[in-house]
Image (tube, helix red, strand yellow):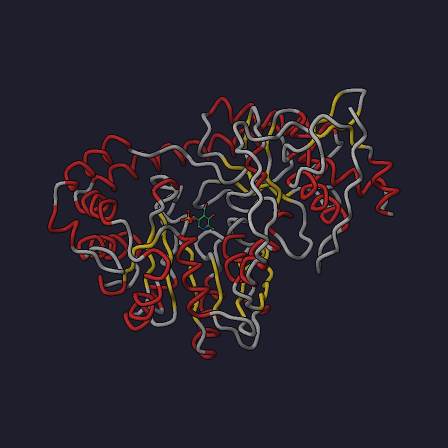
Length: 482
Ligand SMILES: Cc1ncc(COP(=O)(O)O)c(C=O)c1O
């Protein structure tokens, strides 16, 4: 195999560590075809070429290995993996139209670990990475609801930007009864999932010069949507009590928060902080965008009432059916004061006119008939059991480590001893067939190392085996509980 042409080192981005910069350069070279599969990657040559330490390049190569771009052959070295997509269409050369500012910003904000990111391409024997669907979709019940409503011509033909009235009513009833939110049907808009709501809010309320608060570490989907419209991002640190209001800026257009189950640390926002955050928003005329993504899966006590229930005038509540039903549905909701919805009803049609009516009618029927509640009870029991299995397995094989029990959601947060290299751990685990997510890929500022272990999509035996392999990997790397 011919030697690999050495790819260029891309310009550094603010706050980016050198190994991340090197990994990004390699990734881009792989994606643009500069790195040919099967050819050897010499970390020494790359380090010389880029004028970086060899250990930095080694970290980058390990990261690419975890993402599936590089494979390590025993006693032979690192090689560019065959990650090509079968059946890829022939290369076509489109006109060279420059990207818009929005697209340029959207692409420059892309990082591994992002939802639908390229990291998802890697395959593992045991995959504990975030972003896996728990596979709980009640196909038959959904198919029955769809079939029943498919013949409902009057309802199918009357479309509205916010969604059918009966679905908005069913969601308002559900949120009031189940979550203690303060919702009437005229405050509900159906969305194509949380991401579409974040995009619509970004385009309606943000622009260059406006400030959006995000949590750090936090959800890449929010960071990317706000960054793409040119807003200034203001990251606020998170600890075991959730977002720390001391880090809030003097002024901001909105603050995106996950108070019920901080993403990705799973912390619940402490009571005093909830009040401080609401006080901050009210005194600054800012929106709070509350992402309630994990509320349907609480494992023990009910999750706290959403902030929206305390301050419906300031809070825009976002919910999704991606976890409780399936991400493929692209179905969620946004709750906001009616005057805000009046605006969104006029900006939304530019993207997708209105939500898919048939799906919305099926959802209304599913919610109002009690079918959703019955489905959720079964699904919750299964997810809570898997959570318990992984927690116990970790306590058994990693005594001294302190996994944080998740009050809700589909993953566990496992703090690791300081000084450990997350990319090295993740790469080594990958070589043992174990897929892991680390907190660093969701963070702007350096964080104490931690793993985010998704559990809801795997059976008890696989979870126990995953915990066992993780313990072996940590042992091999001589990592001891801190
Ligand atoms: C924090 C957070 N919000 C929202 C979602 C769901 O997004 P969507 O409704 O766009 O699928 C996820 C997905 O896992 C998430 O982690």
